[in-house]
Image 1 (cartoon, rainbow, N blue to C red):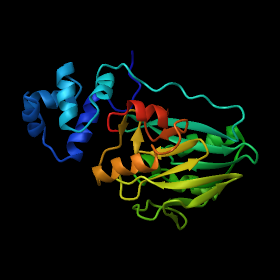
Image 2: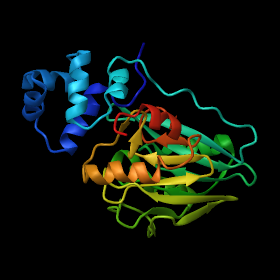
Image 3: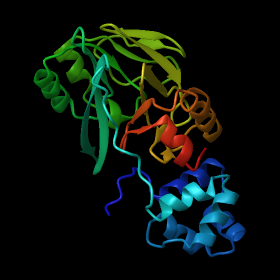
Length: 275
């Protein structure tokens, strides 16, 4: 089958290794294989044995059983189900940036038809087309973090919608037409009748955050199905903030990441090797 996860075995061990400041050679020595073999695994050109998976998982403080399921392509999250009695809809806009798909979202209040644009996926025209197709009124732009694959096109969307733009106080600021509205943990933004709560999820970036409402959380690059974002700033902060602020939500909460398929809190607690 074509594997649908954002991160494969090689991505996962590479992120965990770099986050814990281990070289490929150090990991290889601890596992009892060559540095070239570790490098090949991280490049997807060498499949590990089951024994190797468990040894690597132990050294990197990952869950071996969960990691093996991903290494052997035996797990992917179940397709999400949208409840008919939900008071909101989520529209995913996914398109490649630099050869890799990036997700943006519309969070739509069913009662008012007001909508939040969550990230831009560097494809403003697609987002504006979807706003017209859905016949919604955009009232806010919410940025999970400021990396260019998630914010390019921001000024075009701002000019087209005249929406206020929200970003975490600690996050580097992208180019913007208007002053950015700064947020902190537990702040709320109203979208129609919805209250959207800010949850701190730093580590991939200094002020990465997620946006939670009712049964959905938009998590940017903090967590993916079966993985986490690259720990560019702090591996410890990323793991702890996701555990404390995302995986503490009810199991049925749907997670909409910046890359890869959607998942749920329950799926990630059962299947994500980082936790």
